[in-house]
Amino acid sequence: MHALSASFFLQMAVILVVCRLVGLLAKKVGQPQVVGEMIAGVLIGPSLLGYFWPDLMSAIFTKESRGILYAGAQLGVGLYMFLVGLEFNTSHFRSRARSAACVSVAGMLVPFILGALLVLWLQHVPGIFSPKVRYFEGALFLGAAIAITAFPMLARIISERGLSGTSLGTLALAAGAIDDAAAWCVLAVVLATFGASQPLVVGGMTIGAEVVAIGGAALYGIVALTVGRKWLAGLGRRAEKAGEVSQPMMALVLALFCLAAWYADIIGVHAVFGGFILGIAMPRGVFADDIRKKIEPFAVVFLLPMFFTFSGLNTKLNVLMQPNLILVAVAILLASVLGKGVACWAAARLNGEDNATSLAVGTLMNARGLMELIIINIGLQRGIIGEALFSILVVMAIVTTLMTSPVFELVYGRKKREVAIPADAAGA
Image (tube, rainbow, N blue to C red; front, top):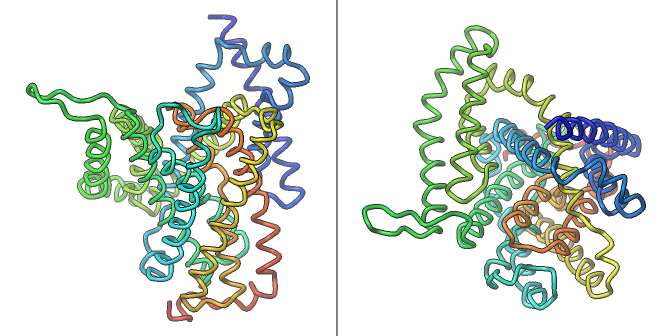
């Protein structure tokens, strides 16, 4: 046990220093810090550190300590999704519902069609999908992986560039929120049909794993967003009165988060679903602001780098040196960038947006970031995809996220932002 704890503290020191340094370098070249941390996770895995200094990597990331790293990574990503749910603003839908729905549907439909076509070919490529995966499961998973948008990153880009009250900002936020909600629902269906949970026997009657997962998730969502939201509103009123969230209240919120994550896991979806829905159900105002202020620093600074590292330890870029896998990587990258970007651009244009705004929407919706890593890690853990496809999708996530800021500046620069019309004034 002493050796295990010593190994854990050493690897955490390495993880935190490398992620912070690479993250700062990313910020210096105009990229979000999260992009640098995603890259850092790959660098300290077998793709770089393990390739040149395998003994050093094995000494730092021992087999015994990876279990702790995995648990910390799941806690970090679960809390992160809870915070994403906490920032989820339904007012975006009311102001740009029609345009956002069209952009989101187009941004989902085209990637799913392309994913379905790609799987016809990829099913026969070794190391891409598990032999147990049926065609429709592979098509749904790849479609969701291509269609997902990094909603938190999208929100931060819009906020940092002063676009929060503009027609573009409101449209992109609403479309991104719808898009991500739909992608998570599809992933839940894939996990359910793939047998991520066990059948339930009640009174001699067997209820299938799919019914347990989908029915359990639907029940949880309905209860959390109706009865749960009303009950939690009382905590919000107490926080407003006190001006802060007390320690006992914080303990209650964290206990609820753990229960939500546990429930989502045992029904066969994933802990992140539980955290995300609970975040949406939480009251806003002082309560949400104080919860975020107290949880976010530890979750983002300490726990999320564990997730990036765990992803990096499973990423083996040397597999992409095989000619057939290079072709697969290029095909998936093109399908991801063009399928998502062009579809969202076209939908925005058909809904009356000017060309610059439409191109900006397509660019923002193409960022995948951390959300992509969450989906593909779930796919790898549940045995849906192999290491080769996992590595390809990590590269796709990094490339599409790196592209977002420079392409956005190119198609929607300072001049456009200065004349951006607020959503209310546009009659949206």
